[in-house]
Image 1 (cartoon, helix red, strand yellow):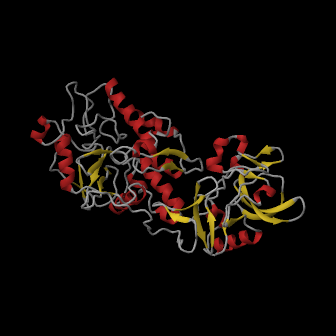
Image 2: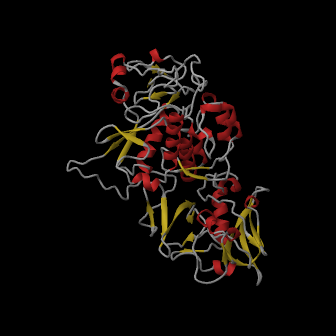
Image 3: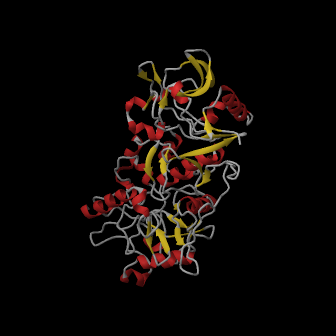
Length: 480
């Protein structure tokens, strides 16, 4: 029991290792090595990784595209679906196991997880994040693997579903010599305790949850270091409709190397994991694909907009003054920073939210109106009242609610976040909304700003914001 807990804790810690350290290894993030150029995801792809994919698509391709990423609500645990539906603005910065991206717009806690007991690990985040993701179509899964190729593999590593033959070969390597003779993994150990999540009678005092969907990495790893290649959920192969490995509803004897689980639609017993293949050229040198451009909803032409580049995942601009990168978006004929400015000027009045610098990476700085006039980098400017009017006109032309469209969960790419303001001598609560400075003044004491409400969902140009207040800044690109 203690040994299995140690294995589980070790795997959970692996999920939380900073991405920078993992990428320094000779194998792709979250995989085990099968041979020189072939790697296999260590567990089934988990809910947290899928939600990080959802967050990325939402931020870069918009709400309609993100909706297509969601699983079938009837083919996933009901409590997990309720958790997914309760998307929040409280960003989970933890990097997911199989995406290399933050989990994103979901709650860190989930009280409902208590009903799952030992089926889920106990972590500082919602345990639902460590269940295998189910309820997906074959096409959704293929798209996810292709997305990993671009965003995680940088087009130097190809992620895809294994062929049935590849899956059999890898699974065979996971077996002990005795198990290879019969072609499947033993279902119980010498103590009559389960070693995989099959459909078993309750034979072990400390494990009464087999036969139900369990978290990834719950049981001991195989010889390759792979978790749950047998049991728990069946795994899709590259052939649509064919899955391998058995699942929690089947007996161990039904889950041998040659067995196939057929499917025609999303189901709760069906998951997947990808294989990763390193691209090697004829001279043995990995190709350098810097600057490869992929189709995105942000149609920016680099030759027309200097200083903006495709980084393999999204368009970004680097502020040469401090080296900070900002995501950018085109809305109509304008190009905007899709993040709040986080530049610390040499002079003027500006504040970190609640005077806590840990807020700056996400919220940027809050600037007085006078300081904001010169805060934007070369080639960009503080938007005027007319710039904001043009923005709202472009968003409204899509026939959508401007307030919803400008938020981080919206379709425009502007990605406004609620970050609080500095008014008088106090910081307003984060949940109260936000507002952005314009360069247009109303009189000697007041200036215009774009207000994005939270308690009252609205977006409007306000004309009476005190210039001494602290507001975030969104820069707009100068016309070429």
